[in-house]
Length: 228
View 1: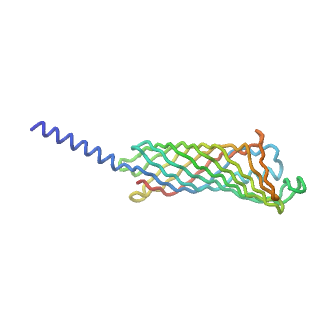
View 2: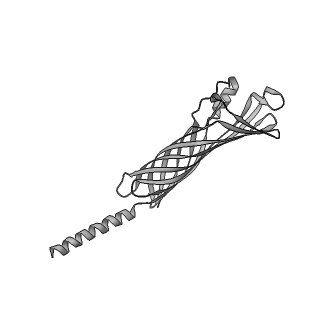
View 3: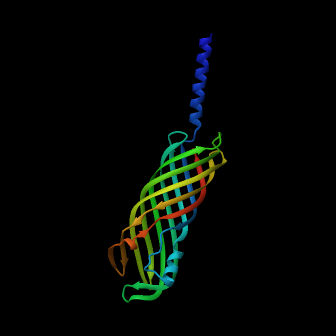
């Protein structure tokens, strides 16, 4: 009788552990939007109005998404998408395709897009899985594109670089599997070669160390998440 009772208790315990493990959300899908700020320094070659104009282009907005799969309560892998966007216009001293440097109207529409793989961890801070602290490290590709204009001439600058990132966030359940969350992200990358398209011509330019395009930026975002 004792053996049967012990066997029953062990079976119930094993079933309970299995059921609890089954209830742990395996997938996390997140969509985000918020504010971003590029942390790279403005090159010393820019001064006066041009320098002020470049500083204004450091601030922008971001949209992004994460899809993650967790092997257990704590560790998982996923994919990440994050886009930084900033635009502006002004009157500064700029390089014109026909007249060299002159004071003229300029406009920029800058996009920095990151695609990458993520190794992620999480800690559910409530036993009912209603709140979670999350962290992730990403590695991928950063694409840079500036659809700009100098005087009446459209100018497109394109480039790409290896990118890496770090995310820290917190999710709180709204109802059932739907959560709200906030996230802080840091992405880093530097472009050393760009392709410039203007006046019907295409030029590839190698950038010197002090001219490299620093794509690094900080992002603060919020959005909805699904824990499935």
